[in-house]
Figure 1 (tube, rainbow, N blue to C red):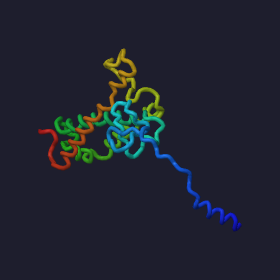
Figure 2: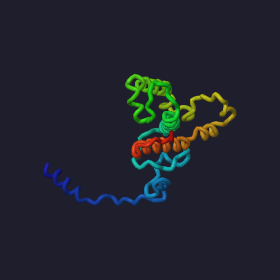
Figure 3: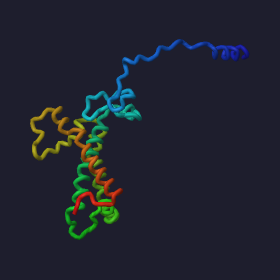
Length: 191
């Protein structure tokens, strides 16, 4: 027993094998944060991919199709929110609710209509669940093209048409309108 204890103490002071410093030739810098390494899965091939992942969340996903699908969905919701925000202040409501401030209109409605909206969102999420999480098909393409704008287009042309960048402007405008209303306490659309 004493021999094992002496051997363990002696091994604690044995120098480890020399390690070589990692080669910097293998590391690519991120476009978004040039002082950080680019994430492995963000190689710049996707639309809107500038290598921004400081928390390393892309390392936890097997592929990025779910993230692309979510980004497109959030962009589309922001587009609808921008239109709804403006219509709330401009269009007469027909007596159901006379609140022109979109922030106050949510609470003025009450629980019933808000729960209906939440239920409709849940139905849409359940209907698109398999496509969202399976990674099958082109992200954002739900084969809904009533005006035949995608007829005869290749898969890459369809993917470019359903661009991730198209959601950035509505997201920014919705955030700007909400900030203006909250901070300045004025309507974002002149009446």
